[in-house]
Image 1: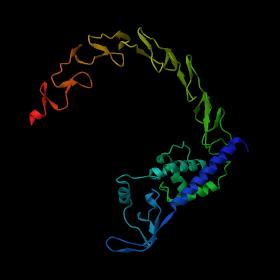
Image 2: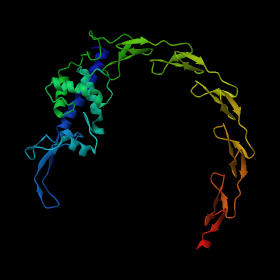
Image 3: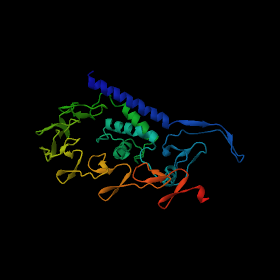
Image 4: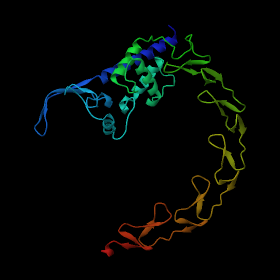
Length: 332
């Protein structure tokens, strides 16, 4: 058995185990002991469905048989779902705890040949495929993942040979040239230097002054060049500027700011310094900005320079009153 089949067998076995565990979970029941309510009413021992985040499995869901009452639950399914989700409805599965089940169902539908689009974990993506599966297995074709549907999926997987690669390869069991089995083992990805085009892998044409990108399915311009159409153009760096961090443009050096396509020197007034970004100025501590200059902060009695250094705050025991500080005791 080659590496590809071994990988496929491992993935198939894990998927089967996961799906079977969900059948046990959805089919579970909880035994409730007899108890007395606050109003004195005695409730006899009974069983209830195990919580699984799927309202369609609850005995209280309209249309389901309740073994504790021996009757079919009546009511409006839409009203029940609105109460259950607080105004939101659900499709195939519900709840964050069942999110992984969406992926497992989609992979099962892919292996069985019902789903032909990539597995993405979105219920809507596989709703149509699930309905088709339900129709073919004489189930209610509403796209809802009921316990019966899940059991049929598991049974269908049991009859599928782990070595069957029809869902991921061509008629002869091979994958396209210049590709390899993907990480999940249920499809194929093009090798580095190639990109997917339909059912084949096409070579990436790399223009001058560029290199293969990180993903390996396209190209990025080298540092000092930027993309323009299907090629890479050199970055023209003006005086007092340098290549930016990304390498596809330029930033003015410290002490200069961008003005059109050039860098202009920052004019720093008295009692000011270059700001943190290096493209402007801030007044020094004890001064505040006024028009294009810095004015000294006039600090009244019983006050100190504030945290920002551009104003004043009254000391403890005093409060601001106009342009001065008044004692709290004097105000009593």
